[in-house]
Length: 337
Image (cartoon, rainbow, N blue to C red):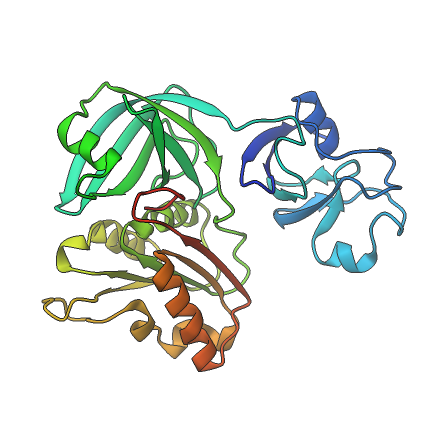
């Protein structure tokens, strides 16, 4: 069996298992996910998808359906392609068009940890392991409110114990619940995974930039790297506003101890900080970690941080090989706050 993640244009991700020799299209339809499809013969190109990770047998098709240039860019035809490993595929359609919906998961609170005055750690035990791509998020319904908030996983995929970092926002919906009402055993309803911010196959050096609780998806990514290894260097710069916002540094130290290819630096923006590295993330982007642009960059933080990093790259004359980012809002909506 090969596991295939189908990423739809609306951010919804669904996972399917392809049997040996089965095409992606046949597996999708067998499981009730109606990806775009017409001829099934590799002649029309309707089922064209882009492979973002993994290897596959492209099968047989005519050039009118898929050009050599498109194939070289990672595209394939779902009606012909047969996985040779686990795959991540981008589908050029919404989940609704493909007659699939976001998955729902039931869970219970295992623990609420006060990591600092500004950050909660939330552990949720789910009935079944949740499959997701490291970096993605779920929506968590706040009990009794009728509303949900979005949070990135800080844990690795495939575990019944899902972990999250949640910023403590005074008066915030989730913050108030966690501070005043949450108890171990309380039911939580999760929907997802979602989001196009996730770790791609590592093909060159990686630069990770985290702001505040935007560290969460990187902890998940580093957990996946620890399981599979990396032939390329990975550097993380983790910036916060005040000393109290700096959390989970022990997890980063453990990751660095386990993986000699991984390094990290922390910084604090407040001029009153006692931290040895003051200032913003952009002030701590060393040339050796930018690799003259031959680097895949991942950023998760507030909108101002995303804009500042873009300006910094432009001022340095750097264009990263790829730039994946996730902006999050103070309310926690948008996956990553």
